[in-house]
Length: 257
Ligand code: 0WE
Image 1 (cartoon, rainbow, N blue to C red):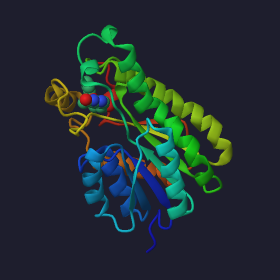
Image 2 (cartoon, rainbow, N blue to C red; image 1 turned 60 degrees about the vertical axis):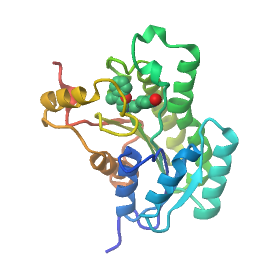
Image 3 (tube, rainbow, N blue to C red; image 1 turned 135 degrees about the vertical axis):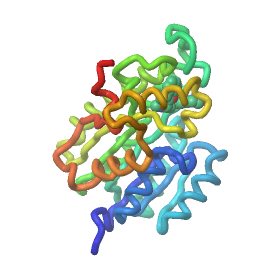
């Protein structure tokens, strides 16, 4: 039996360790037969990304700090050389300074605001532009990860909420730009999951428990569930969907209280 994504290629930005949502996406895409490239932002992450990539036969690993335009250029050049084209791009990157993710939102510094937006929102557009020539003419799909803090106030999420709102708006503008070229752009808004990004977030365990109590499905979600939705958005079954934000949150977002 040939798999749904056999012969297709994908680039995944944002794997840090096996808990990463990006890794959940990678596993699901690889299980569907896709050949993958992974990126790491800093040398500190290189080893763990290489170890994980080694679990996926035929995959490659490249440096890509999205705050360095030359490095993004080189990354896509390499992907073009290795793969000859790209069918999927998974953007699973976010960063804000720790001090911006606590206390009052109105205390957000200009530098902290700019950094959060550069890494967490602008980077989608920066990579989409470079992916364009590699994706053209092959029904490509771009997927990014968001969070309900883009739409509603989540205590301490602060500047990241503003950045995710910009990211979700970017999804719509990119979808409008790229639709005529056959490229779809969507976001998955995932419920909170214990990852490296969540470590050290104040009261994170209490948040997980409260969601499991109130969500229609009475539980939290897993990175495998986020990954499978990513596979759906990358694959042919979602061919009529672009510019959307899909919640993978056990239904939590529908509740009024
Ligand atoms: O988007 C995220 C993670 C965002 C994030 C988290 C950190 C923590 C460590 C971005 N940058 C950093 N920088 C650090 O130094 N989530 C949806 C997970 C998350 O993060 C929160 C949350 C949730 C949920 C932060 C505050 C409140 C809730």
